[in-house]
Image (tube, rainbow, N blue to C red):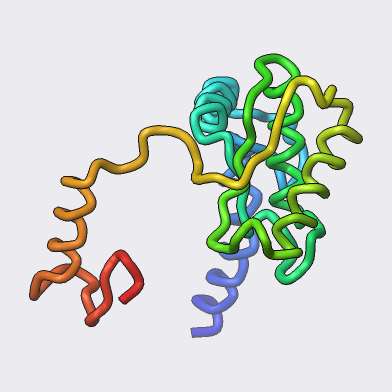
Amino acid sequence: MYRVMVSSVVLVWMLPGTGCQEQSQRLNAPPQGATDNPAALQEQLTYMNDNALLSDMSFGDAHFVPHTAELNGLGVRRLNRYAALLQQYGGMLRYDTPMSDEDELVVARMAHAVEYLQLAGLDSSRFEIELADPGGLGMRSEEAIQARKAAESPGASGSSGSSLFGR
């Protein structure tokens, strides 16, 4: 019995040295930092993400520290990328929020976003910011109706009385 235990301990001790020697690849580096071993598809992922950002052209409440006009890490990252894209293409950036344009927080957030983009080196003639829904195609009404019916149907997977629409 003692030999089996010692052999098991030695085997477990040796395993980390014999396997998993290849460094893993990552498609995107942040927030963990840069990688010396990027995945072959990383460049394509960047182009796809840029295309989606240009279609959407929006930022929202999730990009701010709750109840403040301060950008959080996600907001900084998003507006940094928009600064580069808007420098090249220009355009209208939309602030998507359920709050009204009369809300002081909305005004402060939009002003802070303008200030941030200007500090990032973006010429104010290259962009505007407005309170609006995101761009892009979104979901057709027929698709939304089907998704809602599927979520509300008895026996829907993961259904516990709530739907995709937060009921």
